Image 1 (cartoon, helix red, strand yellow):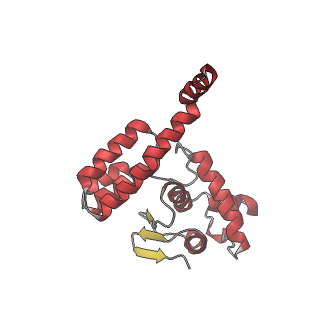
Image 2: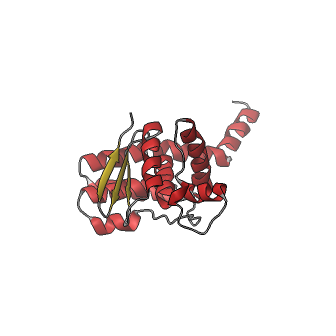
Image 3: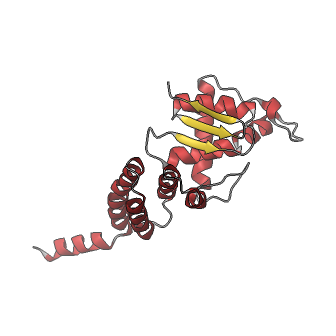
Length: 199
């Protein structure tokens, strides 16, 4: 083998992108295995795989969501709660804030093309400008959570949102449109659960 080829290959292994590719080749199948662990109620294996993923990619949030589902399915609610993500209206504390807000903007544009109209009467803040009201609606906690779910769960997976209060009319309407355009959504509140399916 020529020296130039050896140098090229060794520099490839040293490149940060190569490391990311290797990690993703390991992490993605491992994430699928955690999903299978939930189905087969194998909490122990899911925890072991989750630990490996955390070592390889400490910021992988999809792993946390799936492990939370494994714990929930086996009735281990305390462990599930420690892994769940929490969102507040206009929340910008999440490590994926930039991506979440970009997806929210994209979703808003797409949903308007299929008939979604923000219900500005639901804004119970002292805001006069209609555009500011629409922006406030687009940053509600349910929508932040749905965008996060779309980004961090496998395609086709149902997004489950738990809210301790009643959902406003705008979020209810938006969730219907989101489920038709993107994914099924289970929205659980203090008065019951509504499941929106993809048509």
